[in-house]
Length: 216
Image (cartoon, rainbow, N blue to C red; front, side, top):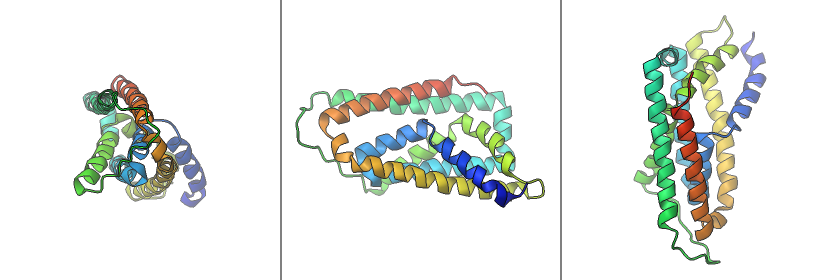
């Protein structure tokens, strides 16, 4: 199998995987809706940084050890589930505390946080959510070997494919964030914002429960 010849199939697979609903898409949608495109950028970059770390772990064999170890898998899935549950409950609390806001026609503009602390908080949220997902380890060790030719170095080729996946996903997620961000003024109306927080909180809690109770 030639690496160049397999790239089209790899790219199609990555696009289909990226389009699948999951914690990453839920985080990006919520962040872009409430903070705009600029506010969603660090979340996307954090998620993709976490993804690339898993790709390098898969190339080095660490992801296989995590997937094979029952203890490591359980610890990761519990931590990942708790993180998503925390984010979901946090969104619910925000919705609850804003229940007294008037349903007015005016838009509540919330400028994206431009502080270094706000940027790194969003980046850290993205990377932690990705790294605490044990399914990412299982996915990596099952996905990448299909596209690594037997005559190519495993680590270098997997690292290269990981960069390609990061580039594709970053482009798609930033496009999603830009599309959602364009409607940000509508999302930030008090009643819409409250409903969005409630719905996104429910989605994150459901995803957290699914991750925490998932099996190999």
